[in-house]
Image (cartoon, rainbow, N blue to C red; front, side, top):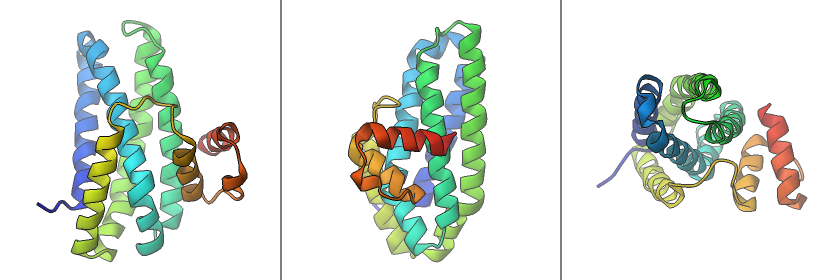
Length: 184
C-alpha cells in the first residue's frame, strides 16, 4: 500500500491535537498520555527532519519554510523536555502544557499552510509515496525517544536543515548549543 507523506504528516497532526485535548481536559490521563505525546512528537520531528525537510528544501523550493520549521522543532523539543520534568497535577504542568500546545499548534498551522501544500503541488505522487514510506519507517524507529536525547547525527541533520555553517566539525554539545540558539 502506498501512503502520501503529506497525508501521513497531517494524520500525526490530528493525533497530536487529540492528545492535547485529552491532556487539557482529562488531567487524570496525564501520567500515561504525556510520554505518548512526547514520543509521538519526537518521532514525527525526526522523520520530518531526516526525510521530508531535505526533499521539501531541494525539490519543492521550501528552503525558508524548512529552516523556520526546524527552529520550531527545536523549541518544541525543549518545551517537551521541560513538560516531562513537571508534576502532572501541578500548576507548572498546566502552564508548560499551554506553552507546548501554543508552539506546536502554531507550527502545524504554518506547515499546513505553506510547506505541505508546496510539496503536494511540486512533488509527484510517486515521490510523495516514496517519502511517505521513508517517513513512516523513520517515525517507527524513533517512537518512544525522549525529548532532548538526539544523537549527533540527528543534530547534524537539524543543523543542515537550518543551514548552519561548519556543523560537521562541531561536537554534539556544540551542535546542541547552536540549535538551542536557533530555536530561541
